[in-house]
Image 1 (cartoon, rainbow, N blue to C red):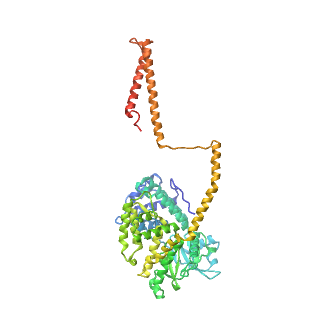
Image 2: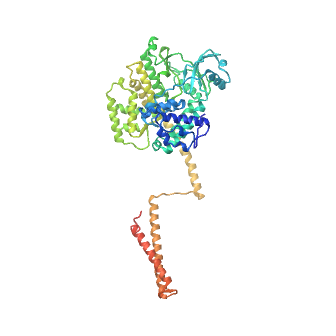
Image 3: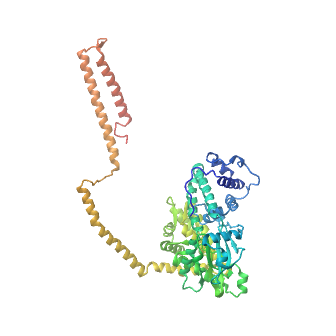
Length: 570
């Protein structure tokens, strides 16, 4: 389990300081020295920052900022590559230009030694590989940022398996990087005004939660078993088996798939596969995952799909899965239907249900942009429509209005676009719209299915009965509080404070006028009585009374004039 918390001052361990300097050096190398200077890191951590500040040779200035961000992340290693890959699925968190560039990120990491594999297997299972497997290939068949995969044969059953082993100390490495990332995010929010709108600390915290699942292989094992249950009765899709008895948080043992990658078109042709059928089945399987089950493979690129004999589709690598609820599926189907009908009156409301926004958008401008979008694709043949380009157009429309698609919907459409691209590579005549139409129609039909309506009525009736059951107790509690004097009723009247203020001002002035009159009358009596002490034969106390009355009268008159006779100041 990853452990990060809000950090005020970075830990001063050699490990943190060394990695911090590496990160800052890479940022400066790719032209982000101005950002490093703006963060004022010297105030918070002493890591010899003066040695790396300023311009560095070899800075890449001709590339766009998103390109430089991607290159910097690739050089910074596994944590940052994963960070970029996850951000590439979140247009609600970062600008569209960065989403498009970060989607190009690739895991380019060397494999780790087999001795580390033996150590990891022993630590996780209590046995060395040779005690579990009849044989295991020391050279991995695949290596990624989090772990690598070895082919093996189980000792007891002779079944061929794929053994996925986590990199040594990868969790500690990621925790250090996350701590530094979080510290940098706090500094960005504190010192870089432009970054406040992006909420970098929120982004890092969401990334940390995603990495918790990535680092726990039992989560991926659960994904595989969940996915397999969806296709138990579907002979066109095969899901590899998980060997739970040998799988742990850092070790995943699953059935080895001996098939042909979906991207190996020439081999598929040589082996006699029906490429049109493969394209059709692959697209239908993705649509079924999304529209029927709402739990889908979120990264269906060619490397994650194998083709087995009889044109059977097999998915692998279940680390990134998507979920979409029934209501979101229905809202998306409604939006697609309105696009087809060109219903400009309802389409804005349908789109708003699919998006997040802080402020209400300009509806007329949004409607105009959507109608232009519809006109752009209305007369294009179905086989020429590119879902990826359509998605980009929609995102550009939303960006203009400071809106974003809900994360689950973006991931869903991106998965559809990836599947469509693969299907068209297999069958140039493939039309995703024709395959999607029956699934969307089924979503509409299920909305009015008797069982679902009955379920809603039952839920509503249950809630109503619960309410009736709770009312007597609630009334009894109110009466009890009233009887014991514990019942308080608060009435809010916005104009009341203003009226009370005016009354206070009026009463203050009346009191001041009374005091003023009393001073004048009293001083007059004292002067007439010729009470000593006297000054020029005039009683001093009477003269002082007239002086105070004059000052008070002047203040009262000035106050009334300034406030518009005391009634217009509020």
